[in-house]
Image (tube, rainbow, N blue to C red; front, side, top):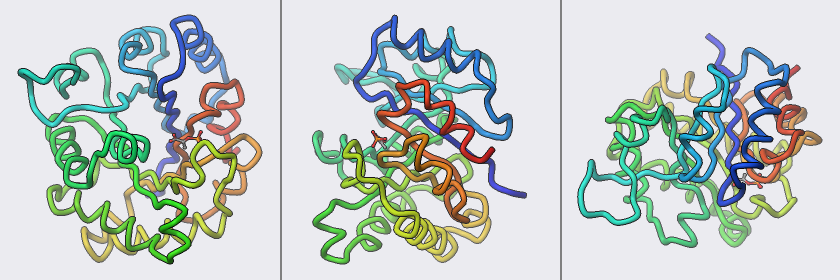
Length: 247
Ligand code: PEP
């Protein structure tokens, strides 16, 4: 069975009630490729609001979740709280959280395990810095980020991997189709050798990093690119063209 194309919109810490309503109204009224799974991820405060406005069939992801069920963890939110408000996905391991908030591989893996156990889908981000790429360490870095998750999680059926080279995020410097395809193929190979052939065949691997309506068509043609995680461009009407990149 072919892997269903998946496009996520990561709003990061952007938006207001008014602008999120505009984005959602645009999505609700747009003609979207029915073969694409679409998930938007507004800031935590607006998750319920987005869920209420968004038409059925389009899903909402949190940008984070904690790895404990409840208790004295000020400022955190739990898997059950997300599910209680109709949220079905969570983005974990985003480089902005890894770098700015010092989230390490083990913590990301622990949160992934908790989210999956509670029934959320996980958009699991990985990717190298410019320094690591120039030192030839891309594959090593990505595999060690994924390896930390594989050490805690056996079932990858609800994980979507997002390969996001840090040097391409928010910089306007998109990876070439060859650079992206090379890493995606290596991730698929790694899944085959370290998880299972089924996981290698079925796991969606998204590309993220300065995706726009201009470059999404070429990237979408690569055999191991199964969709996108989109930051800046998900706030714009052209997000619809990225969702429809395969049409
Ligand atoms: C992201 O934050 O996941 C991302 C890919 O951002 P941008 O598309 O803005 O580079």
